[in-house]
Length: 192
Image 1: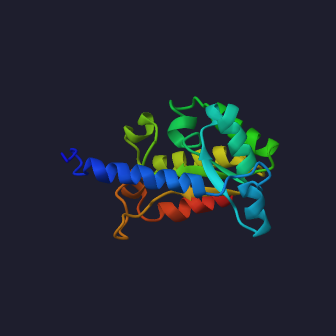
Image 2: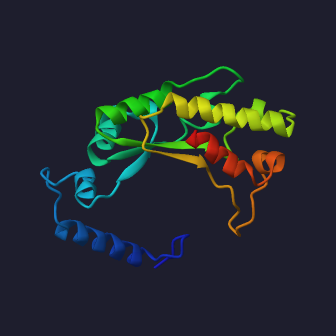
């Protein structure tokens, strides 16, 4: 038999399809009465969460997110570049939609993320800031966002991915502008 570009022969491909068919026929069918994942997690004192996009929390996507999970994490809606794309102009619509949805479905929300090396607005990353200015910008951002959702979120990712895979500090706007102490500063600001 002639090999396919992937290196599989037609016979091995047909054999794989036959095995998949056999598995599907013998696999137990899911029942409509099966408990949602969130109920199974709650019974074990666990959190079963997923990242979501606020604008998609309708239809099947919203139905599954509401039924199956006891926690939601905004995919991008709470990142600095999303909430303050231009300096002093805020867009909370998607983040608010996620928090409102979670509250309506008895879910907790994990705020993601306050300080990160990525997805910052260009006005911030392209600015020329003194350490004092950068420090104030970070503190103000944290106070504003955490204050907006005070009492409504279970947890926050305050500083996301400050280290490289080898354990060294990641070279970022924050580390380069404020030094390693930016992490403690951000945590202190969020706690306040």
